[in-house]
Image (cartoon, rainbow, N blue to C red):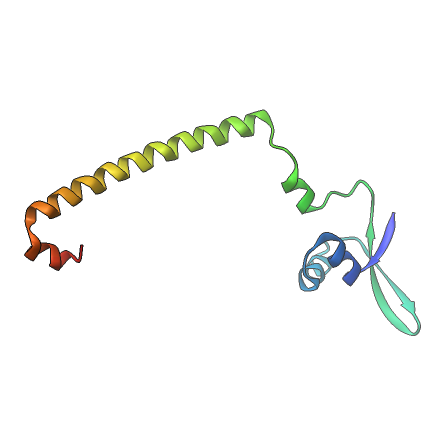
Length: 107
């Protein structure tokens, strides 16, 4: 269990001091106040088993999550193909309309 100042915590976890202060104010982080050299300093208590938000996001995806992502990718590919075919149909229609009408549509 280590004690870090707000600035040290921000540097260690690569987040802004302002965000660390918001986390302290909302009591997301355990803190203690100590008087050092006549000044009250807030120290953040960091436990070894405490998991930060950044480490959670950097963990590898599970198999279920990977499958869900693959399904989402396939769905998006199908949507892109549909949109491309609609765009091609619109281009053909504008070409058939002629130059005068195409200027109105700014194509």
